Amino acid sequence: MPHIVVIDDDETLCGLLEYKLRKEGYDVSLGLDGHEALQLLKGRPADVLVLDIMMPKMDGYHLLRELHSNGSIPPKATIVLSARGEEEDILKAFELGAVDYVTKPFSINVLIARIGIALKHKVNTK
Image: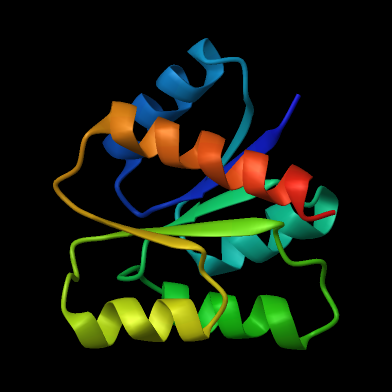
């Protein structure tokens, strides 16, 4: 069962995503900031990380840098989910290793489809 880690400081959104993703058959872990994400990912690597950019304590960009530089095991795929939709923000996320970028507001069903695509791509590139 693929492991999806959702990191977003909006608890309501996290709960909704957890419900929908579990209903689709995914194992889901949640965190509210970058520090929680590092702890979660140390315990069990993610197949897909769904990551907000604007969070307290450690933003999503900083987390992406940490995941690829401190010897931890980065997720197999990262999808950024952010209210920031400027080209500069999107390109920065891609430069830091994201495979997709979804701007808020968004369709949960489209996000779930994009997670499925990220998982298929990960399997096909092993």
